[in-house]
Length: 500
Image (cartoon, rainbow, N blue to C red; front, side, top):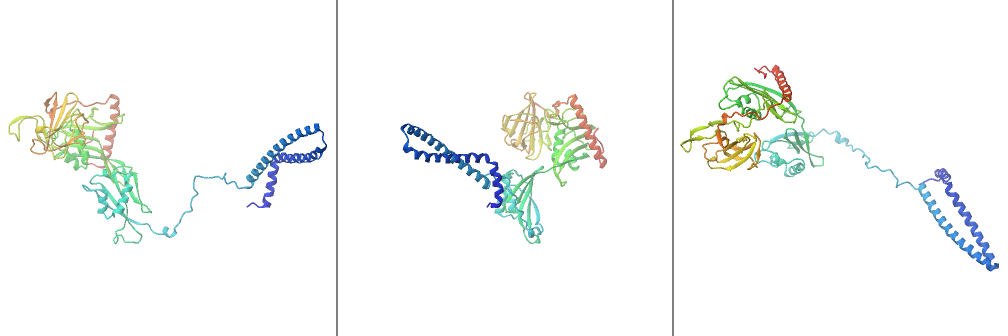
């Protein structure tokens, strides 16, 4: 409510600033008063006027009526304008209030008693998925109620598909206890779980203050470390590499690298030497997250040294090359299965079941049922299915009129069908004993122009070679590998030789 003493100075200033508006209004009032006075005089004199004066008076009357209408309209508009000015000055300016889209901050709610309480005690228990298991079954096995387990899994759906988890997946289940409560005496309250579905990713499901569950995904930064192995072979390449700490998947990789140039069934001898430079990746707690790559590998076999380096090309691809810059990969692999034993060679032999002698058109590799079988080279599936005495059978067509065949398989790679293209080293099926077979093995054939060839006698050129410009960058790659091995060798004198 405005107070009179405070408003008088403002009214004076306001009236002074609007003097141009009031002066015409006062002038209109003066004209209106003069008009009324002239009307009174005219009415008094009209009783004694002549006809001419009456006509003049009628014309004057019409003019006065028009003037009166104009004056009335002007007076009304002036009154409306004055009312608007008064309202604009005296009324609070509500419509033009300055508004902000940002809400005013609430006063912080400080519960001093709660702040003084010690934090909840938390403990975790690690479990892992079993064959045919699910996350719900794992949580139930760890004492989580069905309602809470379902609420936690519902929050997971939008961020991660739990159906992609495989047996062996580790899961940490968390429980919490109020301060001062002995965790050994009570079960505790389920507050969430976490898991690492991929080496570089962590999924966390946690219970909020309102009892709801929230799922977040975190990236796990990994650091790469280098390791070296240098060992003498006493039984097999696999055993020598594993005893030196090389992971099974990297052992399979190095065996595949040498499978183009070394016959593991015939060439390997006791006393041969294996050298490997490889990487492993660790999380922020220095825990192993995943195996890395083979950077350098060398196998000294019967005095001949086969060495290969991993080299990155300008187009982003990476391949292994020998000292001359020739790729390790050949058109076809000699051994399209890992860890197998050569059980039957190419040539004439007495068939173990049929009992008569005939040409054995390929090689037999004995291996456990389910062992992966790889495509020997880039090609196309031209036959897949059951094929007489060969059992489950695949035939691939490659370049240069080469074909490869795989028989007695236990099954095919999921989704593989006739006409599909395959890449060298791609899994196409699994070792079995279908068809005419005495035990689980792979029968492997190589044909050129539809004529069988002994796979062990293949001498195929490299798939590609480095250009002169690429060789310069490759020399840098080799020097970096030698430097790393030298550094590691100075810390561990177990190395007996270094790549030259």
